[in-house]
Length: 437
Image 1: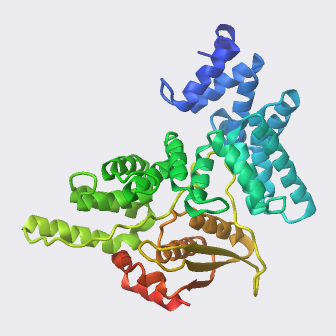
Image 2 (image 1 turned 120 degrees about the vertical axis):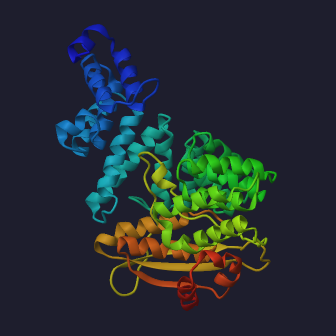
Image 3 (image 1 turned 90 degrees about the horizontal axis):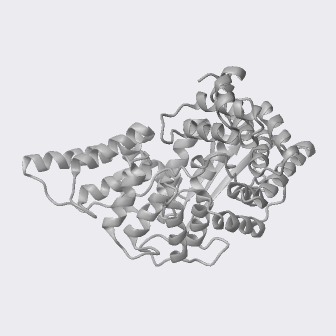
């Protein structure tokens, strides 16, 4: 139907709903362009929600907005959001406006930029008051990492709890991680597990994976390898690398079901294709050798340590959610360093926790990349061995051109996880040994 025919035959509400179905591919084939056409007509009939939907598409450069503006048009979207907020107390428009302001000024150090960040915070607070759970999560991020305000973990935790209570899955995962580690709260594995279960209902791979690992390790829930395998299967369908690796191990040794070494190899090769080839070469060769042994009838049972999880995609999972960044500290030499500090008690070790300190140089164009790397490292699951954390950070630093200022691993950092040695090449192990403090 032409826009004129749509205007003459459909109500504003019908056009908005039809547009939403086309946008999401709900009950029909996905057609973002058709969705934006229907919303444009609905706007002519005075539909405010369609006006908001079009602002979102302007900001992302979707549908006919891409044709009109040639790509994302945040300045045009900002004008629309402001217009909607003037007409009505529209929570999601406040949220969208805050996101644009934050993205534009997040690295600002001057008074004007910080004032804009404060305006963004005010919009997030107002949106959260209208029930927008991701807005509450972004208030948490701003207080946790000092964007436009002084960092305040107590205030940050208050907003994180609110966002989790209102059902934001990313907030639930973050709060669950705090409860697992006892960060700013009393450690509570059972409550952590229940939060992860709630988050998993959204289908987020990071939540599905963590629920699976809780069942696998019996942390916060009764150990059940079969149920664990089911959750990891679901997360692996989304190409979530930690699940691909963990599920590969379970299939190889037959945890939670019958062994399937061919599929275990296929999952490793998939993880390799997603960018982890260098780290997995030895592991893939090892599985291939075992498959050959089975086919030749010469296989001898081997003790295989399970692979730990790799990169977590926590913040990239969140739509329009502010990616938190660690606070800065004064460094020596040029620029400002970003520091990641890991402190945990290794599995099976009665001793005190270890500390892994990694410093990345914050200069010029690499500052945002360094902040992102540190946040990704902080988002790795609690039981990730320090050696793997370092390798992950070193790989990401190399990919993004960030300089590794210093990496200090305590003497036990590699030895406590000697069973993981098959995941690292000799060259990598030499690098780790040389970096021990």
